[in-house]
Image 1 (cartoon, one colour):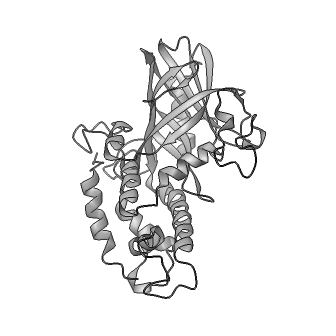
Image 2 (cartoon, rainbow, N blue to C red):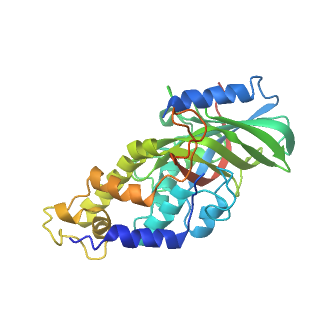
Image 3 (cartoon, helix red, strand yellow):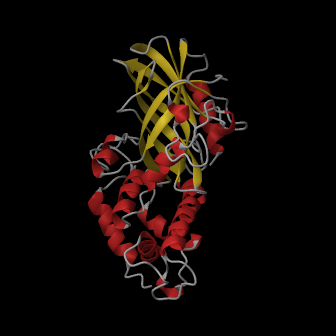
Length: 346
């Protein structure tokens, strides 16, 4: 299995798909919590409007890369029209380079079957307009969800917990400090900066939790849900992306390779089905100098470091929020939708 200089042609395609970015831990959860407290020490007034995410949408095309994005660094001429969505660009590129390896389908499926169970509270005096409102997100406990997401192990649709009447409890030990504040104008909440935690699944066994710094939210909110046009975004520390997202991607890639290139695989063909996602992933990921029909985490790290470089400068040299001229974080923007739900707000 020869690599055919995959990093170079993939990087070229990435640039052609869209150019996102620009110049400009978890000191991080603690720092973000302190920022939230400093921004608004007093509680936001109003009523709790509680929801469960019914769709977490990674970009499927270049238009969505832009429409899901925010200008996170305040640089007007970087990226596409000044908005930042480096990781979203990668999702689109991966689907183009490896047809049949659509990570968006895995993200959708994890929401459908409750393996990603994200809850949102939007507190405001009025959903049509309020000078200040607060959005907080939590993770729900799948085991105690009523109704259960899937009726049985043979349920291929699931989503029963997303009928608008779901009742949930919070997952023990999960973050409760993921909050951003902002006004509501014309039924649209515009919040941030703040901090959020999100979970994505790249496939079975490949669940990843990411902390979004300098996070933003734009939510089209009514009592019944968060509707089309809603989105979340922020910056992920590159070190956290490498330690969490890369291993999840490697697990998802390894599953596709095992399916399409069943052992015993022998180079150069590795027993792959011609043109299959597994074969294409091996061409993309495997180092030609050590061909063994396996895409290791080290090989995934080498390729993804080139395809998803940091594009934001959000922290100074000490790790505190600020800038130091070094790009340290990767931008992401996601579409979201939600339906009404009940859960105890901490």
